[in-house]
Image (cartoon, rainbow, N blue to C red; front, side, top):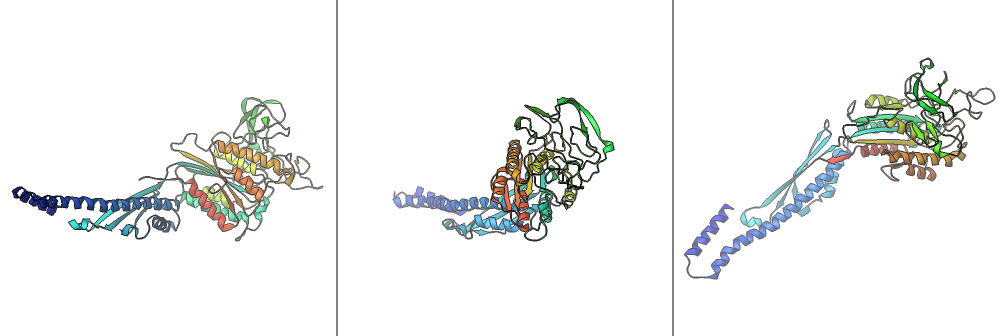
Length: 483
């Protein structure tokens, strides 16, 4: 540019000395800046287009890397998405090596790249090439995540899973994929809490791993209310020493840990609280506690079971209790590994309802923070391998029907429950495993927060189940561009 300026000043001096009035001199003075303007316009426009494409490609690549942050193919995904958005040979640009800096502690990915183009007109003024650069940085958003796994523990989970092993073994392996993705290499995680609710025809509401001792039962005074089962006014509720769940009456000495749904067989929805969270006062009823199931046991002489509701209380309460929300990876891993004794029938509404109560801060479970310091996501991952069936020993006392005849009533309760949960802001992911049934598919799509991926999934085999759990884990870890 300096030589151009000297040349132009030289022309101007000669023009001032020249008295001939020739128009050629005027043209000679004007042509150099005209060429310069055209050169700048064409070549800089090309450079701007390259820089814009470079920035967009880096943004897309960083998002891909963020989604696969802890996976072996993370860098491959970054390169693939960059190449897809910046085609080879675009405007004849030459690219530098892509810089990928990953900070595992801060969960951040930084990308940087330059692109160089050969000039066309600017070569006339000795500028042979132009180089532009772009960068992108992405990190996992600092949001709180409260998540509950609601895992089907009905008897069919002992069946073989396509791909090897049993269905419950496949569910355990897939759950570990989710936990590894969310926790990464950390033993604990700030703003991350995870709980576990195993379920079959009912839910064991004891804290998992604890032992019930009826000698430690106690009662607590509460404002007077009418017991919805007896109609009698009472001013106390009862507790077992190993559960935060209040009871309408004291559990028996051999109570196994399960409770009935808060449902009355009187064709009046206004006094049923099975689809609601926490302690509930309804138009025609007050549910300040739950009714404990029991005593339960193996069939005795004559084919009946002790403590039967309709003469055949033969569906056992699971030995697995609830793992409340907590943020230590090993605790939830141990609880998942302990899921080894599936038994009984399928009551999806029971499992989903107690997952919701475990997830939210109102009583009975209060581990979730009422008002976290950052934005929070609440989610339930619900896995089942079968359609709902009723039974005398289920949480509904068999009043919704026995076997598949109960399905219509149970599915209706489940849909109503899911509507309440989603309206409270909780995200529901449903996973239909191994059982390819169109009616169950329709139900699970309705229960989920959306009818398709990432909210509803069908997993035909073990490998696809692990892939789905990975997708769910990545989806709940929302991302945002920080630059």
